[in-house]
Amino acid sequence: MNAFPSLLHDHAIRHRLRLQTLTRLRWLAVIGQSATVLIIAHGYGFELPELSCFALIACSAVLNVFLSVRFPAAHRLPPLGATAILSFDVAQLSGLLFMTGGLANPFSVLLCVPVIISSTSQPVRHTLGLGALSVLIVTVLAFYSLPLPWYPDSDFEVPYLLIAGAWIAIVSTTAFAAFYSFQVSAEASQLADALSATELVLQREQHLSALDGLAAAAAHELGTPLATIQLVAKEMEKALADDPRFTDDLMLLLSQSERCRDILRRLSTLSAEDEAHMVRLPLGSLIEEVIAPHREFGIAIDVVQGDTEIREPVGRRNPGILFGLGNLIENAVDFAQQHVTVTVSYGRDRVEIIIEDDGPGFAPDVLAQIGVPFMNRRNRQDREKAGGLGLGLFIAKTLLERSGAQLGFSNKPPPQTGARIQVSWPREKMDLFGASAQQRNAVGTG
Image 1 (cartoon, rainbow, N blue to C red):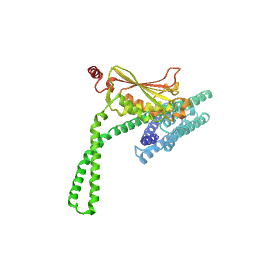
Image 2 (image 1 turned 120 degrees about the vertical axis):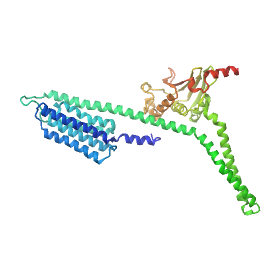
Image 3 (image 1 turned 90 degrees about the vertical axis):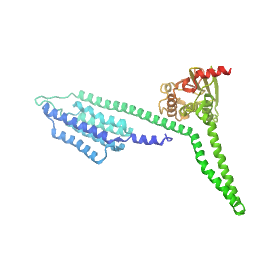
Image 4 (image 1 turned 180 degrees about the horizontal axis):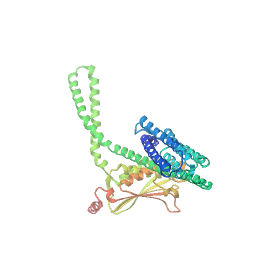
C-alpha cells in the first residue's frame, strides 16, 4: 500500500462520515418520533409523558440546526466526532424508550441503527465502543423503564420472558447486522482500493511505454538550438583563431556540441528503428521480456514451445499484459523450489500460456477465493514467505481479463506438486494480422 500514497489518503477519507448524511437521517428520525408520539397520545389516547418526549425530540432538532450552521454541508466528521454524534442518537432514543415502556416498546429495535451506521464507515474500535454502549442501555431498559402506554381503563403487564426475548433479539440483531454491514463495506472498500491500484499501475506502464516517443520529441526540439550553438562556435573559431587564449575553450565547445549532436542523432535513429518494435511485439519477444527480470533469483525458468499450427502471433505492445504476466511469473518464482515452466502454444483460434512451478501449490481454501484483493496467503505454511499475494494477483488478473484473457488457477495433479496458472486469449486479441494471414504466410514461405 505504501506504493500508492493516494490510496492511503482515500482510505483515511473513507472513515470520515459526511455530516449531511447524519443530519438528514436525524431529521427523518425527528419527524418519525414526533408523529409516533402524537398518534399514541392523541390518536389512541394512551397516557405518556408527552412534554418530556418532545423535549428529547427537540434536543435532536437543536443539534441538527447547530451542526448545519456550524459546519458546511460537505463537511466530513472524523471518527471520534461521528462516534460522539451517534452516541447521542443512542442516548436520545433510549430516553424516549425509557418513558414509553422500555424493551416492551416495539420501536426498541431502532437502537440497532446507529451501530449499523458506524459499522459501515467507522473504525472497528469505535463501532465496538458504540455497540457496548447500546448493549448497556438495552440491559438497563430491560429492568428499568416507565410502563408501556396503554388504555387508561386496563392494565397491561408485559411478561418478563417477553422482555428477555426482546433483549436477546435486539442484541443479536445489532451484532449480526453490524458484522454483516462491516463485511460488505470492507469488501467494497478493498475492491475500490484494488481497482484504483490497478489504474495506477496501468498508467505507470503506459507512461513507461511512451518514453520512447518523448525521447524522439526531445531530440527533434533540441536539434535546432544545438545547431545554432555549433554555428556560433564555428564563427567564433574563425574570428579568434589567432588568439591562443581562446583556442582550447573553442575546441572544447565545438567537441562537446558535436557530442551532443551525436547523442540526439542516436536517439532519433533509435526511435525510428524501434518504432515498429515498440508498437508490435511477437509473442516470443513478449514472453522473454516478461521473464527476463526474474532470471536472477536462483530459480530456473524454462520456456517450452507447445504444439503450434502456424507462425507465432504478433500483437500490439500492451502494458497491461506485460504487467499481468510479469506478476504471475514473479509469484511463481517466489514459491518455486527449483524451477518454473512457461509453456507457450498458439493455434488458429487461441493463444495460451501456462505457468507452472514446483512449489507447495495453492491451498484448497485459497483456490476458491483466488483473485480476491488483499487475500494475503497462498499456503498456510508459506504465509511468511508469501508476504502478500492478494493485491498483486488481483491487479494481474484484472489487467489480463481486460485484454480479453481467460484465467484458470489449479494445482498440478498428484504426485506432482506446484501451482498451475493457465492464461488464454482468442487469437484475434493477440494478433494484429489474424490467424488466416499468418497461415497464408506460412504456406507461402514453405
